[in-house]
Image (cartoon, rainbow, N blue to C red; front, side, top):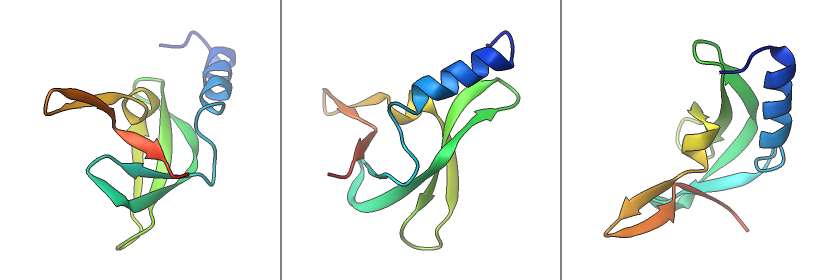
Length: 88
């Protein structure tokens, strides 16, 4: 947990080096369905840096996921894969 708002700002700045507003990403389960990054934020209850993103399909729902989880890996059939990948 961050000690103060300066620490949170630093964490957000570091996160912005990895995930940028306007980028498109896809989830490993559906590489043909994209999400657009709307920005970064902080989950108030935990002071965790989070990614705010919108599905580019269906109803365009806005989602929030911790940065750690967004950039994390998951195990599929014994292999570790990125949960989300940037669209090239």
